[in-house]
Length: 519
Image (tube, rainbow, N blue to C red; front, side, top):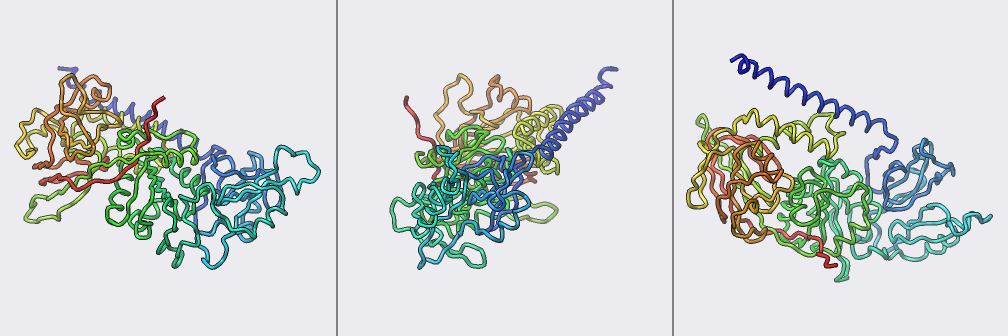
Protein backbone atom coordinates (compact mmCIF):
# COMPACT_ATOMS: atom_id res chain seq x y z
CA UNK A 1 0.00 0.00 0.00
CA UNK A 2 2.90 2.34 0.83
CA UNK A 3 4.41 1.74 -2.58
CA UNK A 4 1.10 2.56 -4.28
CA UNK A 5 0.81 5.79 -2.30
CA UNK A 6 4.25 6.86 -3.50
CA UNK A 7 3.37 6.18 -7.15
CA UNK A 8 2.49 9.87 -7.95
CA UNK A 9 5.94 10.89 -6.61
CA UNK A 10 7.55 8.34 -8.94
CA UNK A 11 5.69 9.84 -11.92
CA UNK A 12 6.67 13.36 -10.83
CA UNK A 13 10.36 12.39 -10.51
CA UNK A 14 10.21 10.67 -13.92
CA UNK A 15 8.91 13.82 -15.63
CA UNK A 16 11.32 16.03 -13.67
CA UNK A 17 14.37 13.97 -14.71
CA UNK A 18 13.43 13.68 -18.38
CA UNK A 19 12.35 17.32 -18.55
CA UNK A 20 15.61 18.52 -16.98
CA UNK A 21 17.71 16.55 -19.46
CA UNK A 22 15.59 17.82 -22.35
CA UNK A 23 15.84 21.49 -21.30
CA UNK A 24 19.58 21.12 -20.65
CA UNK A 25 20.20 19.77 -24.12
CA UNK A 26 18.02 22.47 -25.66
CA UNK A 27 20.00 25.21 -23.87
CA UNK A 28 23.25 23.65 -25.12
CA UNK A 29 21.94 23.71 -28.69
CA UNK A 30 20.88 27.33 -28.28
CA UNK A 31 24.28 28.50 -27.02
CA UNK A 32 26.08 26.44 -29.67
CA UNK A 33 23.98 28.02 -32.43
CA UNK A 34 24.57 31.52 -31.12
CA UNK A 35 28.32 31.22 -30.59
CA UNK A 36 29.52 29.10 -33.51
CA UNK A 37 31.45 30.91 -36.22
CA UNK A 38 29.84 29.13 -39.17
CA UNK A 39 26.41 30.59 -38.46
CA UNK A 40 23.90 30.36 -41.28
CA UNK A 41 22.78 33.91 -40.54
CA UNK A 42 21.40 35.57 -43.64
CA UNK A 43 20.28 39.14 -44.18
CA UNK A 44 16.63 39.35 -45.24
CA UNK A 45 16.27 38.70 -48.96
CA UNK A 46 14.81 41.44 -51.17
CA UNK A 47 14.34 41.41 -54.94
CA UNK A 48 17.30 42.84 -56.89
CA UNK A 49 19.31 43.32 -53.66
CA UNK A 50 22.32 41.37 -52.50
CA UNK A 51 21.58 38.52 -50.08
CA UNK A 52 24.66 38.28 -47.87
CA UNK A 53 25.77 35.13 -46.07
CA UNK A 54 28.85 33.98 -44.21
CA UNK A 55 31.57 32.65 -46.53
CA UNK A 56 31.83 29.66 -44.18
CA UNK A 57 28.41 28.39 -45.28
CA UNK A 58 27.87 25.69 -47.89
CA UNK A 59 27.59 27.13 -51.38
CA UNK A 60 26.40 26.14 -54.83
CA UNK A 61 28.18 28.98 -56.66
CA UNK A 62 31.86 29.99 -56.33
CA UNK A 63 32.97 33.13 -54.55
CA UNK A 64 36.20 35.00 -53.80
CA UNK A 65 37.92 34.94 -50.39
CA UNK A 66 39.10 38.49 -51.15
CA UNK A 67 36.71 41.42 -50.76
CA UNK A 68 35.49 42.65 -54.15
CA UNK A 69 35.78 46.27 -53.00
CA UNK A 70 38.97 46.59 -50.93
CA UNK A 71 40.75 43.35 -51.84
CA UNK A 72 41.15 42.28 -48.21
CA UNK A 73 41.73 38.57 -47.61
CA UNK A 74 38.78 37.34 -45.55
CA UNK A 75 39.95 34.66 -43.14
CA UNK A 76 37.67 32.64 -40.89
CA UNK A 77 37.88 35.03 -37.93
CA UNK A 78 36.95 37.94 -40.20
CA UNK A 79 33.61 36.32 -41.05
CA UNK A 80 33.55 37.52 -44.64
CA UNK A 81 30.32 37.65 -46.62
CA UNK A 82 29.22 36.58 -50.08
CA UNK A 83 26.00 37.15 -51.99
CA UNK A 84 24.28 33.81 -52.48
CA UNK A 85 22.52 35.12 -55.59
CA UNK A 86 25.36 36.57 -57.67
CA UNK A 87 28.59 35.49 -55.92
CA UNK A 88 30.03 38.93 -55.06
CA UNK A 89 32.23 38.85 -51.92
CA UNK A 90 32.58 41.51 -49.24
CA UNK A 91 34.20 42.12 -45.92
CA UNK A 92 31.85 43.52 -43.30
CA UNK A 93 33.22 47.05 -43.73
CA UNK A 94 32.47 47.14 -47.47
CA UNK A 95 29.04 45.50 -47.46
CA UNK A 96 27.05 48.76 -47.67
CA UNK A 97 29.42 50.17 -50.29
CA UNK A 98 28.90 47.16 -52.54
CA UNK A 99 25.13 47.33 -52.00
CA UNK A 100 25.26 50.81 -53.55
CA UNK A 101 27.85 50.16 -56.27
CA UNK A 102 27.00 46.70 -57.61
CA UNK A 103 23.64 45.38 -58.70
CA UNK A 104 22.59 41.82 -57.89
CA UNK A 105 20.58 39.56 -60.18
CA UNK A 106 17.83 41.34 -62.09
CA UNK A 107 14.67 39.28 -61.72
CA UNK A 108 13.01 41.16 -64.59
CA UNK A 109 14.38 42.84 -67.72
CA UNK A 110 13.20 44.95 -70.65
CA UNK A 111 12.39 42.44 -73.37
CA UNK A 112 13.60 44.86 -76.08
CA UNK A 113 17.14 45.00 -74.64
CA UNK A 114 19.77 42.23 -74.85
CA UNK A 115 20.10 40.39 -71.55
CA UNK A 116 23.77 40.51 -70.44
CA UNK A 117 25.90 38.16 -68.36
CA UNK A 118 26.31 39.00 -64.68
CA UNK A 119 30.00 38.55 -63.86
CA UNK A 120 31.56 38.30 -60.41
CA UNK A 121 35.26 37.94 -59.68
CA UNK A 122 35.66 34.62 -57.86
CA UNK A 123 39.45 34.40 -57.57
CA UNK A 124 42.26 33.45 -59.92
CA UNK A 125 42.90 30.43 -62.12
CA UNK A 126 45.06 27.96 -60.22
CA UNK A 127 46.94 26.77 -63.33
CA UNK A 128 48.74 30.12 -63.46
CA UNK A 129 48.30 31.49 -59.95
CA UNK A 130 51.92 32.77 -59.68
CA UNK A 131 51.70 34.81 -62.87
CA UNK A 132 52.89 38.42 -62.43
CA UNK A 133 49.92 39.60 -64.50
CA UNK A 134 47.31 38.91 -61.85
CA UNK A 135 44.70 41.09 -63.55
CA UNK A 136 44.76 38.91 -66.66
CA UNK A 137 44.58 35.76 -64.54
CA UNK A 138 41.40 36.68 -62.64
CA UNK A 139 38.49 34.26 -62.82
CA UNK A 140 35.02 35.63 -63.51
CA UNK A 141 31.79 33.68 -63.02
CA UNK A 142 28.36 34.38 -64.54
CA UNK A 143 25.68 33.61 -61.97
CA UNK A 144 23.10 33.00 -64.73
CA UNK A 145 24.82 30.63 -67.18
CA UNK A 146 27.48 29.23 -64.76
CA UNK A 147 30.31 29.99 -67.20
CA UNK A 148 33.78 31.02 -66.03
CA UNK A 149 36.14 33.20 -68.07
CA UNK A 150 39.58 34.79 -67.64
CA UNK A 151 40.60 38.48 -67.36
CA UNK A 152 38.82 41.83 -67.33
CA UNK A 153 39.17 42.20 -71.09
CA UNK A 154 37.25 39.00 -71.65
CA UNK A 155 34.50 40.25 -69.38
CA UNK A 156 34.18 43.52 -71.32
CA UNK A 157 34.11 41.66 -74.62
CA UNK A 158 31.55 39.11 -73.40
CA UNK A 159 29.17 41.85 -72.23
CA UNK A 160 28.19 42.48 -75.83
CA UNK A 161 26.83 38.92 -75.92
CA UNK A 162 23.42 37.89 -74.64
CA UNK A 163 23.43 35.42 -71.76
CA UNK A 164 21.70 32.22 -72.91
CA UNK A 165 21.54 30.62 -69.39
CA UNK A 166 23.36 27.64 -70.94
CA UNK A 167 23.48 24.83 -68.34
CA UNK A 168 20.05 25.38 -66.75
CA UNK A 169 18.26 27.25 -69.53
CA UNK A 170 15.39 24.72 -69.52
CA UNK A 171 14.58 25.28 -65.82
CA UNK A 172 15.27 29.01 -65.42
CA UNK A 173 12.59 31.69 -65.83
CA UNK A 174 14.40 34.36 -67.92
CA UNK A 175 14.13 37.91 -66.48
CA UNK A 176 12.79 39.31 -69.82
CA UNK A 177 9.79 36.97 -69.38
CA UNK A 178 8.90 38.28 -65.91
CA UNK A 179 6.42 41.09 -65.32
CA UNK A 180 6.50 42.85 -61.96
CA UNK A 181 4.17 45.34 -60.33
CA UNK A 182 5.39 47.01 -57.13
CA UNK A 183 8.05 44.33 -56.68
CA UNK A 184 5.46 41.55 -56.97
CA UNK A 185 5.33 39.04 -59.81
CA UNK A 186 2.09 39.34 -61.76
CA UNK A 187 2.75 37.09 -64.77
CA UNK A 188 5.29 34.95 -66.60
CA UNK A 189 5.54 34.87 -70.39
CA UNK A 190 6.20 31.24 -71.41
CA UNK A 191 9.39 30.45 -73.30
CA UNK A 192 8.76 29.20 -76.84
CA UNK A 193 10.57 25.91 -76.30
CA UNK A 194 8.84 22.58 -75.64
CA UNK A 195 11.70 21.45 -73.40
CA UNK A 196 11.30 24.46 -71.07
CA UNK A 197 9.96 23.32 -67.70
CA UNK A 198 10.99 25.80 -64.98
CA UNK A 199 11.87 24.58 -61.51
CA UNK A 200 10.05 26.24 -58.58
CA UNK A 201 11.51 25.70 -55.11
CA UNK A 202 9.38 26.02 -51.96
CA UNK A 203 11.16 25.83 -48.60
CA UNK A 204 9.82 26.16 -45.08
CA UNK A 205 12.26 27.59 -42.54
CA UNK A 206 10.02 26.32 -39.73
CA UNK A 207 10.33 22.63 -40.70
CA UNK A 208 11.98 20.22 -38.33
CA UNK A 209 15.59 20.13 -39.55
CA UNK A 210 16.21 23.91 -39.72
CA UNK A 211 18.14 23.41 -42.98
CA UNK A 212 15.59 25.08 -45.21
CA UNK A 213 17.38 28.43 -45.04
CA UNK A 214 20.32 26.71 -46.69
CA UNK A 215 18.03 25.36 -49.43
CA UNK A 216 16.79 28.86 -50.22
CA UNK A 217 20.36 30.04 -50.49
CA UNK A 218 21.85 27.34 -52.73
CA UNK A 219 19.03 27.47 -55.28
CA UNK A 220 18.88 31.26 -55.36
CA UNK A 221 22.36 31.22 -56.85
CA UNK A 222 21.37 28.92 -59.73
CA UNK A 223 17.89 30.13 -60.65
CA UNK A 224 15.97 33.36 -61.00
CA UNK A 225 15.42 34.41 -57.33
CA UNK A 226 11.65 34.60 -57.91
CA UNK A 227 11.72 30.81 -58.41
CA UNK A 228 12.89 30.27 -54.82
CA UNK A 229 10.07 30.85 -52.33
CA UNK A 230 10.25 31.00 -48.55
CA UNK A 231 6.75 29.86 -47.54
CA UNK A 232 7.19 31.36 -44.08
CA UNK A 233 7.05 34.77 -45.82
CA UNK A 234 5.19 34.11 -49.10
CA UNK A 235 2.27 31.68 -49.26
CA UNK A 236 2.07 29.05 -52.03
CA UNK A 237 -1.46 30.33 -52.81
CA UNK A 238 -0.01 33.69 -53.91
CA UNK A 239 2.67 31.99 -56.03
CA UNK A 240 0.33 29.76 -58.07
CA UNK A 241 -1.32 32.89 -59.43
CA UNK A 242 1.67 33.47 -61.73
CA UNK A 243 3.17 30.00 -62.16
CA UNK A 244 3.69 28.81 -65.76
CA UNK A 245 1.20 26.18 -66.89
CA UNK A 246 3.95 23.53 -66.92
CA UNK A 247 6.67 23.30 -64.28
CA UNK A 248 8.53 21.08 -61.84
CA UNK A 249 8.28 21.85 -58.15
CA UNK A 250 10.67 21.01 -55.33
CA UNK A 251 9.27 21.19 -51.80
CA UNK A 252 11.87 21.36 -49.03
CA UNK A 253 9.98 20.76 -45.82
CA UNK A 254 7.94 18.27 -43.86
CA UNK A 255 4.67 16.51 -44.66
CA UNK A 256 2.62 19.56 -43.66
CA UNK A 257 4.53 21.85 -46.03
CA UNK A 258 4.16 19.35 -48.89
CA UNK A 259 0.40 19.13 -48.33
CA UNK A 260 0.19 22.94 -48.24
CA UNK A 261 1.89 23.25 -51.64
CA UNK A 262 -0.15 20.42 -53.19
CA UNK A 263 -3.39 22.00 -52.01
CA UNK A 264 -2.34 25.37 -53.45
CA UNK A 265 -1.57 23.75 -56.81
CA UNK A 266 -5.03 22.15 -56.84
CA UNK A 267 -6.62 25.61 -56.75
CA UNK A 268 -5.10 26.30 -60.19
CA UNK A 269 -6.30 23.46 -62.41
CA UNK A 270 -4.50 24.86 -65.47
CA UNK A 271 -1.08 24.25 -63.87
CA UNK A 272 0.42 20.85 -64.61
CA UNK A 273 3.09 20.62 -61.95
CA UNK A 274 5.19 17.60 -60.99
CA UNK A 275 6.27 17.75 -57.37
CA UNK A 276 9.53 16.41 -55.94
CA UNK A 277 10.54 16.33 -52.28
CA UNK A 278 13.59 17.31 -50.22
CA UNK A 279 12.80 15.92 -46.73
CA UNK A 280 13.24 18.62 -44.09
CA UNK A 281 10.64 17.64 -41.49
CA UNK A 282 10.73 15.26 -38.56
CA UNK A 283 8.70 12.27 -39.79
CA UNK A 284 8.94 12.79 -43.58
CA UNK A 285 6.51 9.93 -44.25
CA UNK A 286 5.57 10.94 -47.79
CA UNK A 287 9.23 11.34 -48.71
CA UNK A 288 9.96 7.86 -47.36
CA UNK A 289 7.03 6.34 -49.25
CA UNK A 290 8.13 7.86 -52.57
CA UNK A 291 11.80 6.99 -52.19
CA UNK A 292 13.29 10.44 -51.48
CA UNK A 293 14.55 9.23 -48.11
CA UNK A 294 14.05 9.83 -44.40
CA UNK A 295 16.19 12.99 -44.35
CA UNK A 296 18.36 15.13 -46.58
CA UNK A 297 22.15 15.08 -46.63
CA UNK A 298 24.01 17.15 -44.05
CA UNK A 299 25.85 18.92 -46.89
CA UNK A 300 23.37 20.04 -49.56
CA UNK A 301 24.24 19.87 -53.25
CA UNK A 302 21.89 21.88 -55.47
CA UNK A 303 23.38 20.53 -58.71
CA UNK A 304 22.87 16.90 -57.63
CA UNK A 305 19.32 17.65 -56.48
CA UNK A 306 18.44 19.22 -59.83
CA UNK A 307 19.88 16.21 -61.67
CA UNK A 308 17.75 13.85 -59.55
CA UNK A 309 14.59 15.88 -60.18
CA UNK A 310 15.13 15.99 -63.93
CA UNK A 311 15.70 12.22 -63.97
CA UNK A 312 12.73 11.39 -61.70
CA UNK A 313 9.59 9.61 -62.90
CA UNK A 314 5.96 10.60 -62.37
CA UNK A 315 3.90 9.06 -59.57
CA UNK A 316 0.19 9.87 -59.04
CA UNK A 317 -1.06 9.84 -55.46
CA UNK A 318 -4.61 9.82 -54.10
CA UNK A 319 -5.99 12.94 -52.47
CA UNK A 320 -8.63 12.63 -49.74
CA UNK A 321 -11.18 15.18 -48.62
CA UNK A 322 -11.68 15.25 -44.83
CA UNK A 323 -14.94 16.99 -43.91
CA UNK A 324 -15.48 17.67 -40.18
CA UNK A 325 -19.04 18.60 -39.21
CA UNK A 326 -19.14 19.71 -35.54
CA UNK A 327 -22.07 18.57 -33.44
CA UNK A 328 -24.37 21.16 -31.91
CA UNK A 329 -22.94 22.37 -28.61
CA UNK A 330 -24.83 24.55 -26.11
CA UNK A 331 -27.37 25.23 -28.82
CA UNK A 332 -24.71 26.53 -31.24
CA UNK A 333 -23.75 24.85 -34.51
CA UNK A 334 -20.17 25.52 -35.62
CA UNK A 335 -19.00 25.70 -39.23
CA UNK A 336 -17.90 22.66 -41.17
CA UNK A 337 -14.14 22.31 -41.61
CA UNK A 338 -12.63 20.84 -44.79
CA UNK A 339 -9.06 19.58 -45.12
CA UNK A 340 -7.22 17.37 -47.60
CA UNK A 341 -5.00 14.40 -46.74
CA UNK A 342 -2.26 12.73 -48.75
CA UNK A 343 -0.60 10.60 -46.04
CA UNK A 344 -3.08 9.75 -43.30
CA UNK A 345 -5.72 11.06 -40.93
CA UNK A 346 -6.05 9.87 -37.36
CA UNK A 347 -7.93 10.38 -34.10
CA UNK A 348 -6.37 9.47 -30.77
CA UNK A 349 -3.09 9.12 -28.94
CA UNK A 350 -0.75 9.44 -31.95
CA UNK A 351 -2.37 12.78 -32.76
CA UNK A 352 -2.08 13.74 -29.08
CA UNK A 353 1.70 13.13 -29.11
CA UNK A 354 1.96 15.16 -32.34
CA UNK A 355 -0.02 17.96 -30.67
CA UNK A 356 2.24 17.90 -27.60
CA UNK A 357 5.24 18.19 -29.92
CA UNK A 358 3.58 21.05 -31.82
CA UNK A 359 3.20 22.99 -28.56
CA UNK A 360 6.82 22.21 -27.56
CA UNK A 361 8.39 23.49 -30.77
CA UNK A 362 6.39 26.72 -30.67
CA UNK A 363 8.54 27.85 -27.74
CA UNK A 364 11.22 30.50 -28.34
CA UNK A 365 14.29 28.31 -27.72
CA UNK A 366 13.08 25.67 -30.14
CA UNK A 367 14.20 27.67 -33.17
CA UNK A 368 17.71 26.41 -32.33
CA UNK A 369 16.59 22.77 -32.40
CA UNK A 370 17.69 19.97 -34.72
CA UNK A 371 16.17 16.81 -36.12
CA UNK A 372 17.89 14.83 -33.34
CA UNK A 373 16.26 17.02 -30.74
CA UNK A 374 12.91 16.53 -32.47
CA UNK A 375 13.22 12.76 -32.16
CA UNK A 376 14.18 13.14 -28.50
CA UNK A 377 11.16 15.34 -27.91
CA UNK A 378 8.84 12.83 -29.56
CA UNK A 379 10.29 10.02 -27.43
CA UNK A 380 9.84 12.00 -24.21
CA UNK A 381 6.30 13.07 -25.07
CA UNK A 382 5.35 9.56 -26.17
CA UNK A 383 6.69 8.15 -22.90
CA UNK A 384 4.58 10.66 -21.03
CA UNK A 385 1.43 9.45 -22.82
CA UNK A 386 2.12 5.89 -21.64
CA UNK A 387 1.47 7.15 -18.12
CA UNK A 388 -1.29 9.57 -19.08
CA UNK A 389 -3.50 8.81 -22.10
CA UNK A 390 -5.31 12.10 -21.64
CA UNK A 391 -8.60 12.17 -23.55
CA UNK A 392 -7.63 9.15 -25.69
CA UNK A 393 -8.47 6.38 -23.22
CA UNK A 394 -11.41 4.09 -24.06
CA UNK A 395 -11.63 5.62 -27.51
CA UNK A 396 -13.66 2.67 -28.80
CA UNK A 397 -16.54 3.78 -26.54
CA UNK A 398 -16.60 7.28 -28.02
CA UNK A 399 -16.01 6.50 -31.69
CA UNK A 400 -18.27 4.75 -34.20
CA UNK A 401 -16.92 3.91 -37.66
CA UNK A 402 -18.59 3.00 -40.97
CA UNK A 403 -16.72 1.91 -44.14
CA UNK A 404 -19.67 1.96 -45.16
CA UNK A 405 -20.45 -1.12 -43.02
CA UNK A 406 -20.11 -0.53 -39.27
CA UNK A 407 -16.80 -1.67 -37.73
CA UNK A 408 -16.59 -3.53 -34.43
CA UNK A 409 -13.74 -1.93 -32.50
CA UNK A 410 -11.53 -3.54 -29.85
CA UNK A 411 -10.08 -1.44 -26.97
CA UNK A 412 -8.32 1.45 -28.73
CA UNK A 413 -6.53 4.71 -28.14
CA UNK A 414 -6.08 5.65 -31.83
CA UNK A 415 -7.82 5.08 -35.17
CA UNK A 416 -5.77 5.72 -38.33
CA UNK A 417 -6.81 5.96 -42.00
CA UNK A 418 -3.71 5.37 -44.16
CA UNK A 419 -3.05 6.38 -47.76
CA UNK A 420 0.69 5.61 -47.91
CA UNK A 421 2.88 2.79 -46.52
CA UNK A 422 4.60 5.06 -43.98
CA UNK A 423 3.33 6.39 -40.66
CA UNK A 424 5.05 7.62 -37.50
CA UNK A 425 8.41 8.26 -39.23
CA UNK A 426 8.57 5.17 -41.41
CA UNK A 427 6.36 2.47 -39.91
CA UNK A 428 4.55 0.41 -42.57
CA UNK A 429 1.46 -0.37 -40.49
CA UNK A 430 -0.61 -2.20 -43.07
CA UNK A 431 2.09 -4.74 -44.03
CA UNK A 432 3.25 -5.59 -40.49
CA UNK A 433 2.66 -9.09 -39.20
CA UNK A 434 2.44 -12.55 -40.73
CA UNK A 435 -1.21 -12.40 -41.78
CA UNK A 436 -1.74 -11.85 -45.51
CA UNK A 437 -3.69 -8.71 -46.38
CA UNK A 438 -4.64 -7.07 -49.69
CA UNK A 439 -1.84 -5.02 -51.23
CA UNK A 440 -1.62 -1.32 -50.40
CA UNK A 441 -1.32 1.29 -53.14
CA UNK A 442 -1.06 5.08 -53.00
CA UNK A 443 -3.17 5.53 -56.14
CA UNK A 444 -5.94 2.89 -55.95
CA UNK A 445 -8.67 5.09 -54.43
CA UNK A 446 -8.64 3.12 -51.15
CA UNK A 447 -7.66 3.86 -47.56
CA UNK A 448 -6.35 1.30 -45.08
CA UNK A 449 -8.05 1.52 -41.66
CA UNK A 450 -6.01 0.43 -38.63
CA UNK A 451 -6.20 0.74 -34.86
CA UNK A 452 -3.61 1.28 -32.09
CA UNK A 453 -4.19 0.31 -28.49
CA UNK A 454 -1.86 2.74 -26.64
CA UNK A 455 1.21 4.95 -26.72
CA UNK A 456 3.26 1.93 -25.60
CA UNK A 457 1.80 0.05 -28.59
CA UNK A 458 3.16 2.85 -30.83
CA UNK A 459 6.65 2.39 -29.37
CA UNK A 460 6.50 -1.37 -30.00
CA UNK A 461 5.29 -0.78 -33.57
CA UNK A 462 8.22 1.52 -34.25
CA UNK A 463 10.59 -1.17 -32.99
CA UNK A 464 8.89 -3.87 -35.10
CA UNK A 465 7.79 -5.79 -31.99
CA UNK A 466 4.03 -5.60 -32.53
CA UNK A 467 1.39 -5.19 -35.21
CA UNK A 468 -1.68 -2.95 -35.35
CA UNK A 469 -5.33 -3.90 -35.60
CA UNK A 470 -5.91 -4.04 -39.36
CA UNK A 471 -9.61 -3.59 -40.04
CA UNK A 472 -10.32 -3.06 -43.74
CA UNK A 473 -9.70 -1.12 -46.94
CA UNK A 474 -12.33 1.45 -47.86
CA UNK A 475 -13.14 4.09 -50.44
CA UNK A 476 -15.15 6.16 -47.96
CA UNK A 477 -14.99 6.48 -44.20
CA UNK A 478 -17.41 7.96 -41.67
CA UNK A 479 -16.43 8.55 -38.04
CA UNK A 480 -18.76 9.68 -35.26
CA UNK A 481 -16.71 11.22 -32.44
CA UNK A 482 -18.27 11.80 -29.01
CA UNK A 483 -16.28 13.93 -26.57
CA UNK A 484 -13.08 15.85 -27.17
CA UNK A 485 -9.99 14.17 -28.62
CA UNK A 486 -6.79 15.00 -30.50
CA UNK A 487 -6.91 14.63 -34.29
CA UNK A 488 -4.36 15.10 -37.07
CA UNK A 489 -4.18 15.23 -40.86
CA UNK A 490 -0.74 14.67 -42.41
CA UNK A 491 1.03 15.48 -39.15
CA UNK A 492 -0.86 18.74 -38.47
CA UNK A 493 -2.68 18.18 -35.12
CA UNK A 494 -5.43 19.95 -33.15
CA UNK A 495 -8.01 19.21 -30.45
CA UNK A 496 -11.29 18.14 -32.02
CA UNK A 497 -14.65 18.64 -30.36
CA UNK A 498 -17.53 16.16 -30.94
CA UNK A 499 -18.12 15.87 -34.67
CA UNK A 500 -19.00 13.70 -37.64
CA UNK A 501 -15.96 13.13 -39.86
CA UNK A 502 -16.35 12.13 -43.51
CA UNK A 503 -13.35 11.03 -45.60
CA UNK A 504 -13.83 10.60 -49.35
CA UNK A 505 -11.70 10.45 -52.49
CA UNK A 506 -10.91 13.86 -54.05
CA UNK A 507 -8.83 13.16 -57.14
CA UNK A 508 -5.07 12.77 -57.41
CA UNK A 509 -1.88 14.82 -57.36
CA UNK A 510 1.17 14.25 -59.54
CA UNK A 511 4.41 13.73 -57.66
CA UNK A 512 7.91 12.63 -58.63
CA UNK A 513 9.91 9.69 -57.35
CA UNK A 514 13.55 8.80 -57.99
CA UNK A 515 14.17 6.50 -60.93
CA UNK A 516 15.03 2.97 -59.84
CA UNK A 517 18.60 1.93 -60.53
CA UNK A 518 19.40 -1.61 -61.70
CA UNK A 519 23.12 -2.07 -61.21
